[in-house]
Length: 40
Image 1 (cartoon, rainbow, N blue to C red):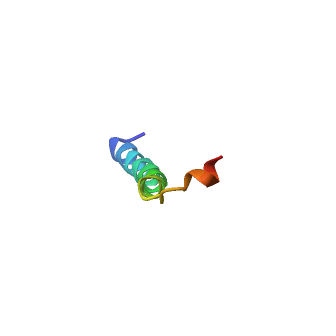
Image 2 (tube, rainbow, N blue to C red):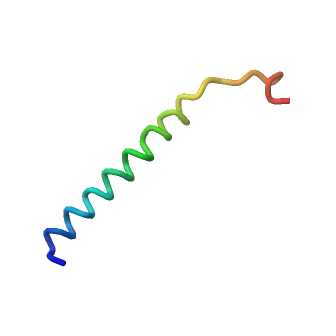
């Protein structure tokens, strides 16, 4: 494999990984406070 192809593949994999993690972490950070009654 050429270096250019490896670089493109790594960029695509990195972009997909970022797009998978970013929304999940955004939702995790911004989740609302849950009242204690609902946790029991």
